Image 1 (cartoon, rainbow, N blue to C red):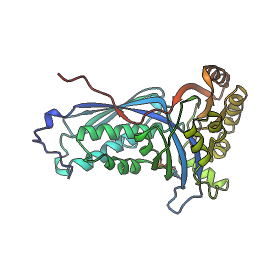
Image 2: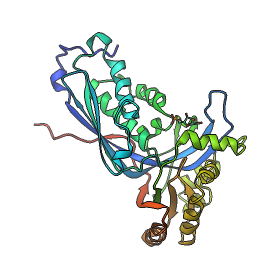
Image 3: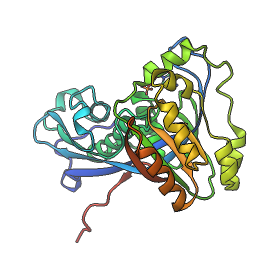
Length: 323
Ligand code: C5P
């Protein structure tokens, strides 16, 4: 159905290179239920896209190879082979759009310019996958309908569908079944990253070992209502993360980071997703300054990042204006 013909008369109109900007996320709530037989945990999570961006550029090649290069912060910690989710995203789109016998000449160069912390619980890998998915779809001319990208995104990872849509959303199931949340106002955040990332499966495993949280996948109605009313204090009072105890159990030094941020005036301090990045919701530029200064002095903090939310999802950056 999605066949790309070599003699497609529109071939000349297709772009040869496409750049997509993708944002990081923080989980305002991360409710985790008990592990299901398939190994995944049922979730009720509220995602907020954050204005820290990676850029994913996909460029057509004359042969069928895929290559991947990475620049930016901590680029050397990111794999540049087929284990990278962005690579898998391109292959997924190519397999959907190009029949096997025609694979010749449908290779691409992928380049990722990273700014999202690596293995930090901010969906860096998932954002890159969403960006690569959208860029490859633009190059290979799928899908026929926007709804077709969402299942491909979910196949790549639980957070990838949200990275496509952005904004603020409730995620159920594995986190991939999304509904938009109406959010009034914007949030200021300070993030403190760690020297060493945490593996998401390892954090979920420790969550299980610590006894899980039966019924944890209940929808956080108080938070959703606070977001819709634009009540910052109520939002701050209802942020939660069921994976936090597991992340702190694996990295006890995170406790002090949260405490120092709280004492410096953060409205709320919590671990971002599966960690180890700590997230601080703050009020005003004064709050930003106090909290970022306080936590940046800690030896276990690698970098502090300032960001706002909500941000948009994956967006094609406009090319040059046509003549
Ligand atoms: O979906 P994704 O590949 O990002 O998930 C990575 C790992 O995180 C899974 O293999 C699983 O161990 C864990 N996970 C989970 N429950 C979820 C999402 C992820 O247990 N809802």
